[in-house]
Image (tube, rainbow, N blue to C red; front, side, top):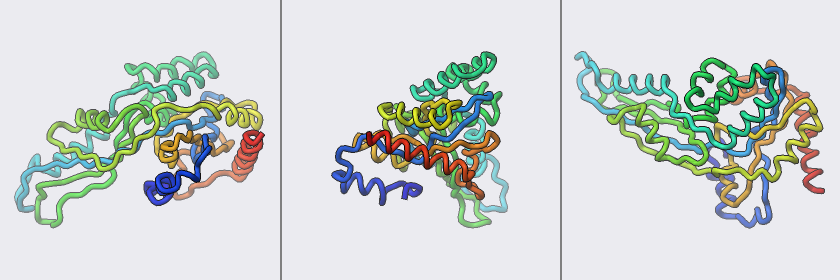
Length: 298
């Protein structure tokens, strides 16, 4: 039940049957190891850390009244402003260890003219401007360099002829490693304003540092299968069951190896109506996983 929070699956096992994992150092998880093309070079990001989940509720209040009487600047207008502010403003830039390693490694492999813009992502004064200039190419770096908040569920009013005095929005927040719920609430409040009530419903801490002990083995397998590619560490914008196994000291690597066509936007297909991968990519991945198990066994 990873998609539902993992409470009845991984969390139950870790909390109720930790003895099943005695001696386990590493886990292979669901995301990473797929090919990514940047400026004509191929890279294989391997997930070594993930962001932390922080679900919140923001509530705004204002005068209620009868729907027949004009209400200017009321609850719904305040909620509209909040949603607009969230849409238009990124939270502050934070350059943490894994994205720094990833970006520096990619930049070092690119043609000279392509290096400065990518390295500029690591300068907080330039980050947001470069992400805007990069367009679609910048989307994958955006959540690695910011805490993020997305509005997902709106609630307000229960009768069409009554102006509500309260409205709320559920917020899906994702927090960078090394930061906590107080950090994202503070950054969110700077965008939302002091008149918005912010309540944290669920925060799940994840490791702030990665154990790279298995990285060379995973990267070596990918290099053997595709000598033109370069493995790089990656911070996952979402969360996986890896955060739960981390409570037992297990380092999870996102390793779902696939060599994808350059034109295939893999991340855009996840959870999409036509989620798919090429059959050749499946064959590439099963071969890579088999090689990892054989080498680790030796």
